[in-house]
Length: 507
Image (cartoon, rainbow, N blue to C red; front, side):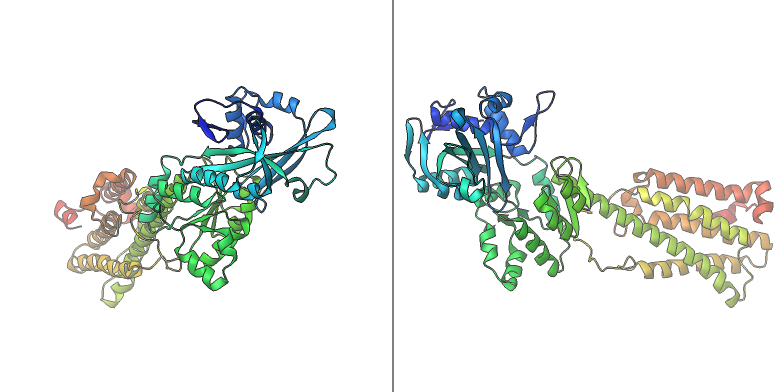
């Protein structure tokens, strides 16, 4: 608590008087935050903040509940934007404490409590005060009370949340995590459009959005009331341009998600409350908070953040892009190497050449050169520009951007190299040229797996050591291939013969 306000004026220390005491009582008991066995507050972060602020003035929750035992509650509702608790006083009297959005609660207040007692309510001045606090990025709650001679018979919002005495405004600072700003910048570089949807005051939303770099301090903020007045066509146009929404309801969130999807956007939606569940379910990727989120929100989502950190979503996007890139690398490698083998065997008879490989050699190539290096491609690190390129179109095939053509042309190149060597050495010992075809295909595939590590950057720029598992797989595969060629026990099994140094160099 950095600054206290009492009787309309800022003070360096907590104020005094009946109104101040009642405000502290409200901060102590009019919420559902509690303390665990170790004394740490638990519950909704906003309510925990109220409990801690009251505790810093010497008030404890247990003692407050003893002074003002709760007898009923009207839970917070996003439509009402209020919460009310009823507490038993002496002689059967009842005190109701209502807290909620200032623009909702102040019209329901008839008086203001000051140190000397009730005074005339100046709604305009109080609303101006709440807007100044909101412009500083504070989440503002207004608190009002009402005394009842007995327990009300009609415990509904329409009956209880009326004719209140205004107590004060509470400002809560919910600072963004330090990594949130850089995460939003990464989103923009990656072609992802971040949008803030909040139930807070528009000025609070604008201040927080500016602090995060989401918008500038003069950017338009669209409220839920403005959205309700728009027909679908105008709504869709507005949603395409708006980056900050304030004072929205769950229905508005659902409508925003649906409008973006109609425009062909892939929508990821974050949320933690029960009311967020419909929008989380409708979104292409629902993201629930694992710490503060409700069970309903987590069940409705496709992904749960265990640390409730938006930057984790950005890291997940980066990892997802890396995995997809590696899948493309694997597909490119396997298709190319298999097409090279198939074309070598298929084209040889048409060129008047004998069968270039025996079955066990084909199995060896498929098992060894397709297996170990292909698996090691999964360890390829993300490229430096992975978060500086736009998202791929959702309908894009995995064979797009030349992958299929690459597999055919490079497969033809491999087959041409192998068949060319076969034709050149055809007049010599059949075991010699067959071993050369076998070895050329193996080494060509090992060279190819190093070449497909990036679609844009050369191997000389990447460096051999930047993917150590792949480098190890290539060296091991080359060593095993040489063993098949030069180990006598394996020559008989694989129908190979040791190659002279010059012929090995040709391979």
